[in-house]
Every structure is written in C-alpha cells, then in structure tokens.
Amino acid sequence: MGWNKSLHAVLTVAVTLCGIATIGLAATYRSGSAARSIETTPQSKTVVARMWHGRTLTSKADEYYTYLKQAGIDKIEAIKGNLGAQVLRRTDGDTTEFTVISLST
Image (cartoon, rainbow, N blue to C red; front, side, top):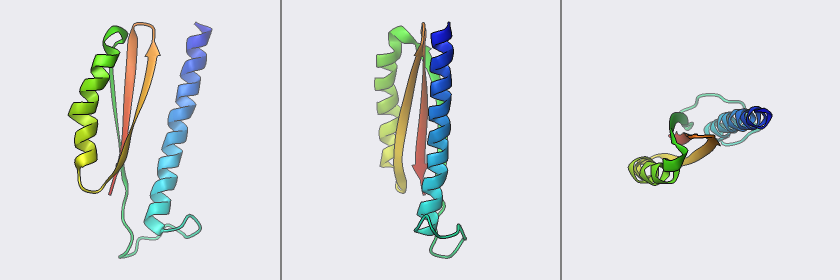
C-alpha cells in the first residue's frame, strides 16, 4: 500500500511538472523568447493544451494503447497546427490509467 501511495505521489508530481512545462512552452512559443513578457501581439500565437484521461484493465492495457495510438494519437498528430502529444501510463494493480496531453496552435 505504501508503494502505491509513493507511486501516486511521483505520478502527481510528474503530471504537475508536465503542466508547468506546457505553460512554459506556451509562454515561450507565444512570445518567441522566455525572456520576453507574454504580451498578445499580432505575431503571437496561442498554444492550446488538451488533456484526456482513460483507464482499462491492466490485462488489456497493451491492446488499449494500440487502439489509443491508432484512433487518437495518430489522428491528433495529423491535425494542422499540432505541436505534439504525450501519453502517460500508470498501472495500479488491476487498473491501468492513461493520460494524453496534446499541444496545438
């Protein structure tokens, strides 16, 4: 039980850091430089981050990931303006959770 709590804490920190990195990426992308202020100018672009969560039985996790990649990630990455997508995976006993984070302009 202690291991699961530790793993959950580590995953929570990792997701938080991904969120902070996404905000930093958005700020850098919008302004063109991390040193500049984040002002909206005609040349700036807005970066949109989307998160999706799903879960399945651990016994079906590999099959689910294959489906997720084909039905979701491949389609997301084909959209004009897409800046990339990340898939996070966490197994807790009989359940495996997936989190998808995608960035686009």
